[in-house]
Length: 263
Image 1 (cartoon, rainbow, N blue to C red):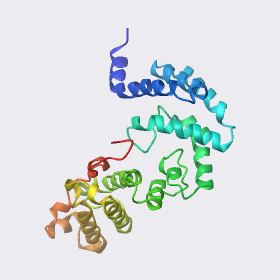
Image 2: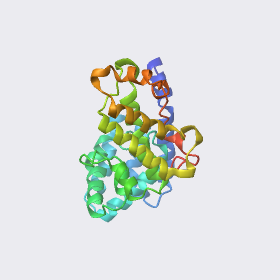
Image 3: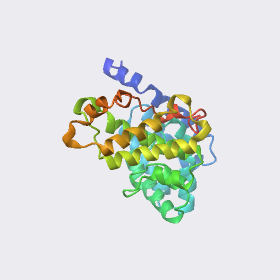
Image 4: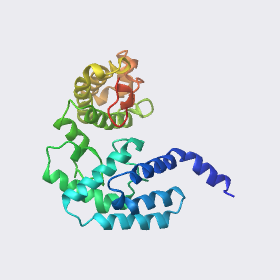
């Protein structure tokens, strides 16, 4: 009999266990099934909570293909990404049950780095954050700049921007300022405007004014003098309480029609 803590853990992660089961079913029907045998075993054992045994199977999967030619590794791993990405809670970031640290470090990380070097103009090579490959470059921004008309890259870049903005603004009412520099905040606001313009008619009404408000906030922050009082007090003095507590909605709320694999 499982303890109450174990039952709670299973309930908390129910969607992740369900995802492992669905992915396993897909891979069992795949043309790459023989190559996936150890990975399928990993999914089954991980679903049963047998971490040590599951990771041994994952290591076997990695060792099986890690020394194959680039084209073979890329074909197999891109197929695996395509089979799993609809189950990633924070797409385009991979789920760490489906892509644990060792698979990123030993397989997808080196593979994606090589892909970026071989085909730097391919936005898909920059989209997924495998093992922090970008060496100080925001890969999602690169993907968007390479193809700003594609909803996948619009969403991915916007998702990262919204997370950054929420972080920089979340203490405004407490510490009475924005956490980053005016220059960085202005860059974030400008990037949101660029993505919003690219989304165009696919953008929802509820976020229509968000880019405008962000740029207004950035302009006031840029001109703010520290010796004139806190930034929050300046906003209130200017009658701009609307810029204090307006929400930065998640990227999912910006799109009328969500891109694959979210829609």
